[in-house]
Image (cartoon, rainbow, N blue to C red; front, side, top):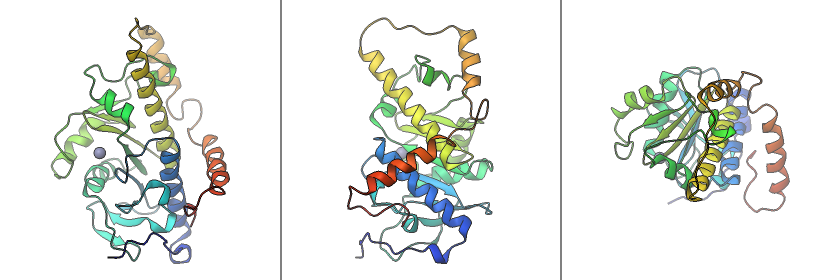
Length: 263
Ligand SMILES: [Zn+2]
C-alpha cells in the first residue's frame, strides 16, 4: 500500500483560484492543529472551489492535520465522488461528505465547513443546558447557534436534511454528544467562528467546574451584544486575524520537519 506523505506540488496543474482555496484550507487545517482542536486523524474541514457549485476540497483520511498540504487535498463533489486526488492509497472519510456536502448544497453562500471533536466541545455538547452566555465570547452565539441531536455516526444520507434544518441560517452548531461545527462565507471566517466557539466551550467547562455561583448578563445586553459580534456587523472576521496567523505558521515552519502547508 502507498501511504507515503510527501505529496508533490500540483500548483501548476490547477487554476489560480483553486490553488488559493487549497492554500487557505491547508492553512486552516494547520491552525486547527496549532490551537489544539484536532482528534488524531479524524474530523474534516471542506472548502468549496471558487466558481463551482458542488466541487469541494477535503483532507485525505489518515493524515495528521499538521501533515496536510495544499497539494494533498482531495477534490470531491457533494455526493462524495472523488474527482481528483494525489497518487496514494489514502481515501476520504464518508462522514466528511455526508455532513459537509449537505451544508454546502443547502447553503450556497457557505464556502467552508469545519467540524471538530474537542474535549471542551464534546463536554458542552453533552450538557442539557447547551452553550451558556457566560462570557463576551459566548454571548456572540446567543440566538445564532443550532443544535443537532445525535443519531449515530453520520454515514446515512437521510440525516442530511436534519443537519441542514438544525443548522438553519446560523454559522455554528453544537452536535449533541458529538462535537462542534461552524461554517462561513470564507475559510477565514469559518475558522474564526470555530475558534470563538471552542473558546466559549472551554471557558464554560472551566466556569462550571469551579463549583461557584455563576453570573450572566441580562436579556437586553445579550441580544445587543450578540448582534454586535456577528460577522460583518462591525467588520468581517478573519481579515485582520488571518494574515497574523499565517505569519505564525510561517515562523513555526522553521522549527518542524513536517512539510509546509503551502506545498
Ligand atoms: Zn464528527
